[in-house]
Image (tube, rainbow, N blue to C red; front, side):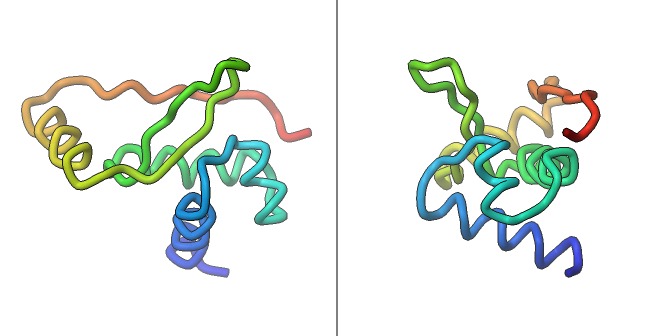
Amino acid sequence: MSTAKLKKEVLKHLLVKPLSLTELAAAMELKEKRVFRFLRSLFERGEIIPLRGPDGIRKYRLTTEEEKAAAKKKLDEGEEVDVDEKDEEDE
């Protein structure tokens, strides 16, 4: 499947409910490393945002229009956007 189609699939999953990297990789039957790249790309474009639950696990959800506008403004002003890097090997 193409990268664009896989990114759309990520967005479809996140439309239902916020998911962690592990949950999303399992749902899509892909390696976490590959899903992380999609998440990073979508985050940099302001389409998703990370959030942490009370258990400390990071989940991702779709952004609202207001959040997209704020992220775009930050990028336009040259501010750095926080993106966690994951360099671990796939399990």
